[in-house]
Image: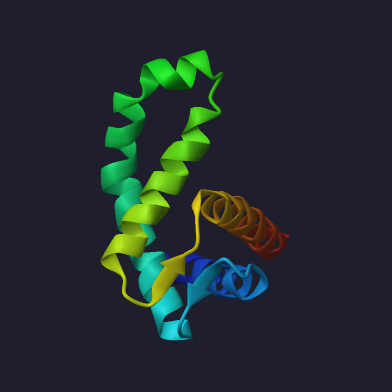
Length: 110
């Protein structure tokens, strides 16, 4: 679990460095973002998924990307050192962090 948290923290920090629309002040803030996102993904995200089932079905699952952005905006609201410039930056951030995490965790298992 700690390895996953470290990988997620590094992914968040690296992707925020690449994307100009996402600002994370320090590596410590990236760690806080990783922890808060883990908590929100366990608590808030399932609730949002259940509430938006009709939209998710109509959009063939693409609305789940919007749910991910909403969870990221919730983290932005809770964390002072995280700043998101807009919806598209949040969407790109979400997708890139997932991609980097997949690559890093995939290479870890080999």
